[in-house]
Length: 395
Image (cartoon, rainbow, N blue to C red; front, side, top):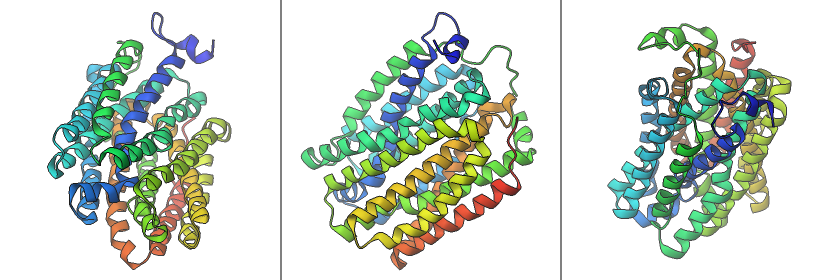
């Protein structure tokens, strides 16, 4: 039995089991969230709308992310477990809607509901883990649940691509709804009801705003997250279009190309599990940012070969995943008494970055993919300056 399992509340499933179930639930939710990027051309054709219309919806989804703090009180008010279950229910409603009513408006609602589900679920899970794991081990634990992010690219998106290729663009949605319902039932069974940690003071009402925004370290960390997210989304919204145009990939091949990204992200998460607690979260983030800047600049130069292009994507996403996952345990400890609010606000900041990145990426791509790479590099260099000069790790 591990130390973390000994610290888990009695009469509930061991923490190891909870981590596995929560990670699988995240994999299902993230498949629905992420497949839009990899399968954007096929979804555009199936809906009968131009690519610009869908990238505009992605920008709207990013803008809605700034409403994430509205859900910041749910884990404290109703418990971490109930907040996670609410998130899963919203997710199931969103994906089932497209399966039952395949239209542009249903698709727009699906994008909104799935991202709202993540606004609720992810901070509740991260807050739950922050309550129950020591900071010295938190990089390992939180990075493990992020396998649900890479798993979506490694398994979920390729399967969605195959379903679309064989049965049409709407094929993945009802299976995702069924998997989401199963994940919700498993979470209900293994996550304890007494979600807020005993004895942990909580900041009520609007008090969290002053506590967070008057803390320079928190503000700097949010700025760091904004820049990292903007850089990645600048490439996320166009990489599938770039691959399809440069190499003539089919929809199934585009789905399978996500396997490369999934492997990179899995490797990045593994590196966080192995290194972040030993090196320190702040130092790990700085190393990741330097590597990311180089990878973003190099990617557009690989367009002459599919193997090189996929290798470039691998480098971009391993560096990005290592960096962004290393920020999560750091955020959980900046203001422990307002942990749920910090993590929810962090989601809003990441979403704002995705909004900016989607707009910037769509604007730059017609001028050449190299501009997307240079924008990503510039954002990462700015983030490196922030982490070096302004962010301090709480000890």
